[in-house]
Image (cartoon, rainbow, N blue to C red; front, side):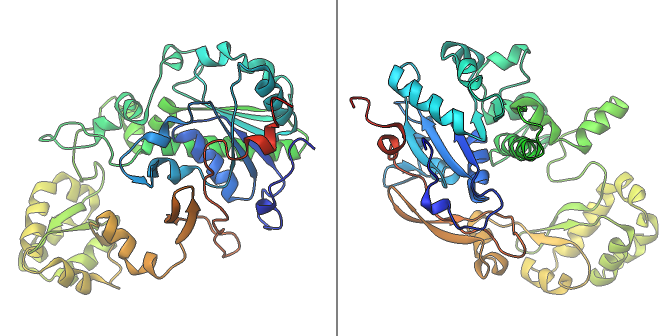
Length: 389
């Protein structure tokens, strides 16, 4: 067999065990699809060009020379280097495609044509094919290189992120790439299910622009239904109040009061004369949204009389949604994460590192991290063979 299963992916009892996925993708959205498939047991082979995935050098930070950006989304796959313009390499990759259950790629249309990827795809018409694209194929933007930041800008996501003082700003994590990768994963899994039901040959496209726009959810629907574009509200919510930060004696605390009952409980726990006096006027969410400035001022005055930690103690267990605003360090140090099984260790070409496991649990068990990313081309000889032989 051209594609023997990696022994590390055998006997896992994971739902995708035995399925073969070939990953041509680079940067983040596509590799995330491959990582999720690998986390769920698929046997994934990543194909990099001779110069490697550019994310390998997107640094700092690095772990012994390898960008942590690459480490984040490239576990659970063997790695081969192939030049698709080289006859030997192309034949070897064609053989792998012939045995693949699914392929992931994010070639631009010009690259797709120049490398004649269509001819490779035609070798296995029953294969599930997932394309991550800048925008829907056939549109002007589909041929233009795009990245998370550009998608955040074009999608309107930046247009609802920030406040009037800051102006539009990007989300602090690559949300556009992540959402696109998750949609691509939905396509991959749906295609594999269809294939299992003898409905093969599906092509799924996960366009970066439209995937990011889909993340706008209520903000987008508000515009589509009313023609009114959302304003920059910072950490405030356009439709709910109080749903954002309040000022404490030593910082801030987030409230997420989604129901009138939660607001009534908040008034009782805070036990502030001004808040209690105005509670009748703020009984419904619509009234609270309409008078958000006065309510915010009243809440800030009340919460400024105690520290964040003191308020956490008072609010805990009262049925009032709240949260401290954590740094990344604080997020990983909170008890739920520190005492759980979400973080584990993984071996990389540069040594051991802590990593996040899949957030999914299967029958109450979180899939383990079986192995980390390989060095560039580590499995080339084993999987593609010696070009001089």
